[in-house]
Length: 113
Length: 113
Image (cartoon, rainbow over all chains, first blue to last red; front, side, top):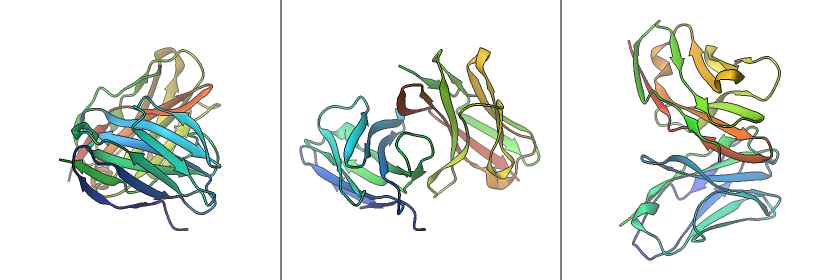
């Protein structure tokens, strides 16, 4: 089975712009979770989607949003980018809802200048 | 809110040495506990998990972890490390009724041949 794929792998944006990141889960997996990884804050949970519905949300401002499509692919959007949004954004998929066994993708490295 | 502490930020060991990485969490209820590993240039992957039952959990590549409820700990152990164990190790927890995965800040392990 192919693993979790994320596109793009690297992205450079300017403050104030918006960005959309994409995640394709492992075939058959219906849960997709997003995490932000930074050197200072470590890995922080953003949100989880299951069957096109947001199940859980972390403590991030409303500029961070996401959605899931009927084929379980997910997108994450960050509007009005700030320098502090520079991070590695990781997507993880799971066959069931919740954090019971997650398979992570390689991440998208976002740099905001 | 739950939190996870990994007090060892960087551990350096020689091959064949024994390993113990500390992980403590702050939540008094039912928890699910995980160790994830990130090898250089690779995705984050699950090493082992504890949900219930035997508090001594065995994972891949000879790793094990022991859940000690009275100490709120889930330390990772390996009796004899190899150079290929060089990686970053993350402890994570979910608490009963809240399936957000909370990660520790990670421990970088360097094995010297």
